[in-house]
Amino acid sequence: MLHILYIVAITAEAMTAALSAGRRDMDWVGVCIIAWITALGGGTIRNILFDHYPMAWVEHPEYLLITAGAALFTPLIASFMGRLRKLFLYLDALGLVVFTIIGCQIAQDIHLPVTIIVASGVITGCAGGVLRDVLCNDIPLLFRREIYASASLVTGGVYVAIDHWYGNPTIAMLAAAAIGLTLRLLSIRYDWHMPKFIYRDKWEH
Image (tube, rainbow, N blue to C red; front, side, top):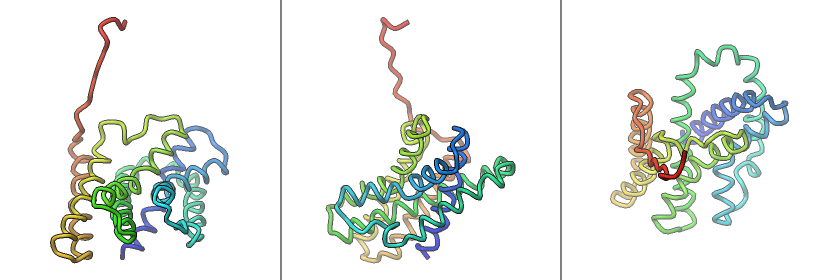
């Protein structure tokens, strides 16, 4: 089940990444690269940091084909994407919690400390989007007021806590996904935001 959701998530991430590339007038190569980085970049960074190989897209090269295909299909339906904005926000939220849980599980498998397990989930869930925004010259969503990294952090924390207390990864996965997804969707629905730090030097004009 988690694998199916992962495929759905990387497909949705690749399509939203293609739109970001399109806003920057990139050619089809650029579109594919941005899609790959967005959909697979978080897991790649995690694996490099933890010296965990092979990469998911090396072990499963079909992930590259799926994300590239989704990205190249996006221009054909770009005129309808505005109507599907909410759907893709929901799919992005689903991707966030799925990536986070997978990141936590991989860190567990290589017996990392609890704090690093949660950090692994956040890196997996958020780093691809940060790379996309940086390459597209946007302020990363992670650094804005959106409840995004916070939702990933809550998802990872719930997963680790329940798995520790009950020793049942399935229950931990379902509970973490439900809580993290609910938090992210409610933040979209009710426009919840994190507090901002605003500082202006008195000598600034």
